[in-house]
Structures are given as structure tokens and as C-alpha cells.
Image (tube, rainbow, N blue to C red):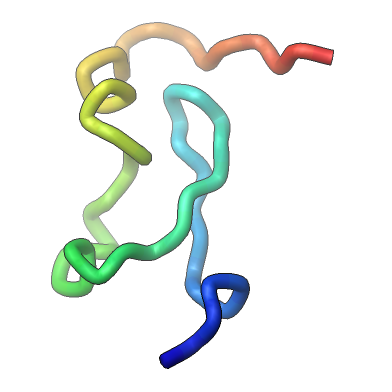
Length: 52
């Protein structure tokens, strides 16, 4: 089993945060775009500003 650091990652277009591969996305990883259902529902909104 690979460590979490070795798993592929993507960046969510809604919130701008990186998210890692999950076993439930094993068959559809190429189609996964959002990190959560909340981001998927809010996809028409612009990305949140990064707080500094």
C-alpha cells in the first residue's frame, strides 16, 4: 500500500485546495474535479481568496 504522500493529487477549482486520491474514486479518478459535494454544488462561484 503506498503512503499518502505517494498518492496522486489534484486541485479543486472551487476552493483551490489540493486533494488526494481516494479508494472510492479508483474507477473514476480521471472524472473527479471537486474535493467535496459542497464544492461541487458551489462550482459556479469564484474560488475563495487565500487568507494570509
